[in-house]
Length: 109
Image (cartoon, rainbow, N blue to C red; front, side):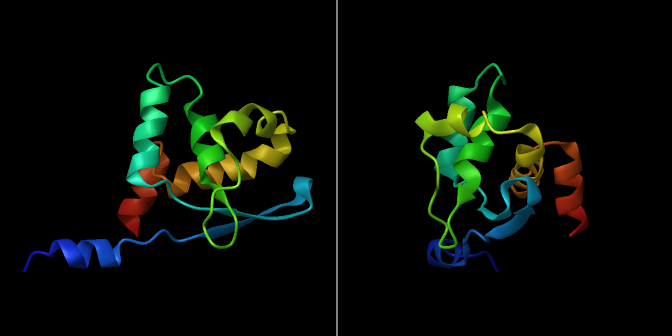
């Protein structure tokens, strides 16, 4: 039996993943983008330049799922050392199913 609109809206939730980032000295929460946020990212990055940065900046959140960084703060975030950003980039890309490996992992369950 197909889901109803109410069932779809009630079931759709964004799980938060906690990533330990030694270079930052602690844990960072990462969440999947909403459909609206994903559309915003792809519209702003139509030539694919900056897509990783846009996804990561929009995926970092507090423990309640509220976004930590505004779009205007993306450059400041990505001015941090690469070893601090790598775990965040990997988690955000995996959670948002960006890249072949992430899509394959999601299919495996």
